[in-house]
Length: 319
Image (cartoon, rainbow, N blue to C red; front, side):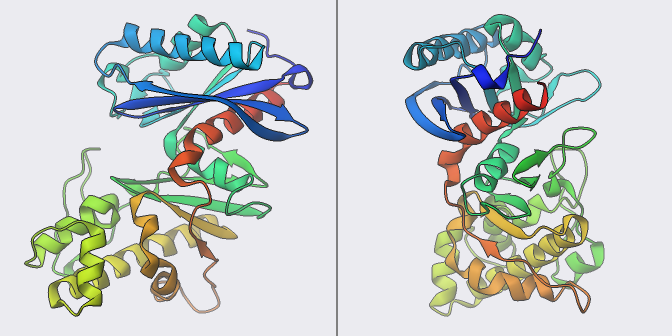
């Protein structure tokens, strides 16, 4: 399908797909700035692919009506797309697994469609108008139910050969570091063991707390207890900080971003911005400096915005 000339595009749709809800935001493109015109959230038909496709088609039709034009669509999905087959993998929307989601939606919508994972859309949103606006490069590091991210240079998302650039959650932590803290190689749903998201995500922090003799409390409660002098909570926070510091040091060495923006539920923990730079520095060799580590400007609200920016990037690159 021929791409629409971006000079004649009045707007873009961004859709953020989650396991329980999907949200469309229609944006008018006004001199390069995205202005929200319409927003709607509906339940995700998680077990019925035909119903899922129809729900997207219906949302887009209502977005078109609000914009007064047939607009291209960007979609942020959980999971990854197999670069060889084009099929969706590891999604928390069961109906999408193994499906040709991009091709099916493009056929159903009859317009350009770009799909990225939700972490990449977060990064792109924070790179353009967000916490890393005007940064030469940035890494958006999600710390939520898992760990993922995206890498942007000059405000543009770089996806890589397989489209998985930024999937740092499935790097492995070294066995020596885990042993130092009395931890094992925890199995990961991806099929590997020792993946860092099993140690630095929100649920992982609760699991660390239980491992050290606590009750597996939520991260906010763990940090609050640590601040009150609870020994188990203090140990949990210290170990989590060290493991996360090692993980982000790897990002610095691999990508050397000018800014790191944290996302996900753990991005709301104030101590990370105070103590994480020193924790990262401990795992870097002399002369390598830690870039600014910042909270997000848009956070979870940036998913649809990032998806709209993704399709804008895609259409401009195709003209």
